[in-house]
Structures are given as C-alpha cells and as structure tokens.
Image 1: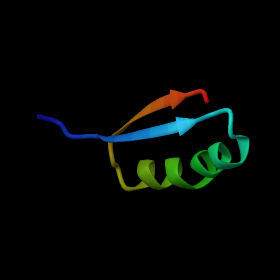
Image 2: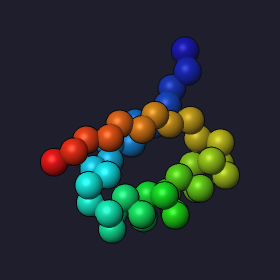
Image 3: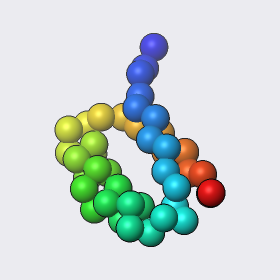
Length: 42
C-alpha cells in the first residue's frame, strides 16, 4: 500500500496558489514525498 499526501488547492486564489508552486511543491519533490493535488474553485 502506498500512502500519499493529499494537497487541496484553490487555484482561483493566485497568491496562495503561487506559494504552493514556489515553495511547497518543490519541497515535496525534493524529499520524495508522494502527493496528489486536488484543485477546487471557490
């Protein structure tokens, strides 16, 4: 069984979405943490 992190994003919030793209996503990739991205639009 593989466990992965679920990241829930609101891509309509450009500021917070940019934080994910510039800091969180590279961090997860660097440390090899598997994740699934779920985008919501509010």
